[in-house]
Length: 113
Length: 111
Picture (cartoon, each protein chain N blue to C red):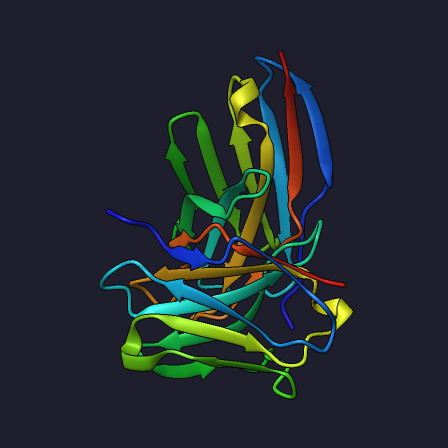
């Protein structure tokens, strides 16, 4: 069974440029999460989806971040424009249950220069 | 707001030693507590999940305990091996699915 697939693995962009990350969750997983992980810290939730509905986006910086999960499967996280402080690893995860995160992808390491 | 703390931030032990990793949380009204392992440059791998009605869970050489009243969970690793070297993170969940992660303990097991 394929795990959670994220792309790209690495991305280097100049500040003020846009960037997008893509996530394909495990088949049948209704719950999808996007996390941001800074170096030496634990993941921080950005947004959580139940099917195509964003049920918790309270931590998403909505002035520059946006996300979508069309048809309740794949998801895209976008940053526009990127700032130096956005450099981090962006992790996608999926689960069949609301109250536990079961599987993480390998993450996208973003470097903003 | 839930806060999760893991102390120490780093731990180095010789191979074969038994060890305990600590996780503390400020809001005892958690629904689940989960332990993860993260290898460098990788995502997180779930190790053990303890539901709020449980006191502990075991998987192989790993045993996780949960004491909600004191706001603590521990991960016990028996007979540590170099392959156990990684960062271990705990996460506390509310019944609405909101997760809060600690910053992890980086474990090094020396041969």
